[in-house]
Length: 229
Ligand code: 6PG
Image: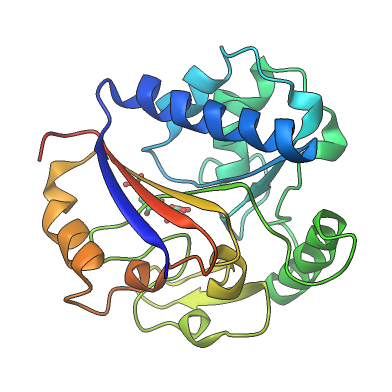
């Protein structure tokens, strides 16, 4: 059963970047590599900007994406574009260390392509283990692109799937519960107090929100909240 901790991260970007940096440095010290999964949306932007100012050994860090919109990488909605603008354009990281979800491909092909790409992170086979997985949460309790009432919530085998989100009338690519719950540390980043009632419902598991099924089997969950509780 994963442990759950809540931290009032103030100032949000600095505290979140400190915790991410610390976790990555620990992983690198222990295993020679830090594997970090990035989330999309607006909340992480200042965190990535703060991370880009840290003296991290990026050559020993692998970056993956928890989800992506099915658009080209230069599209305004692309999570990759957002990460490029806030982080990648400001650090020296080998291109091969950044595993981009290819939103420009046909969704199912893109999901399969990414599942294959992730296998490099598990050379002995099996499910790749991320050291840190960053997740946001929507006001409907979605996380990554695991939205309520979508097929991806049922996936228990594949690591990455294409997921049609009817409410958005759009396809998304998303990591699945098997992959996310194989992580060592999951950091939820929430900096909007209007989401707090849903945060509570997720933590207390009083409502079946998609985010409530994030429970790393051998890891912990940390809620970094940018507002006072
Ligand atoms: C995405 C994200 C998504 C996001 C939440 C919160 O691709 O949009 O992965 O899960 O984290 O929707 O978004 P905000 O941070 O913009 O509130």
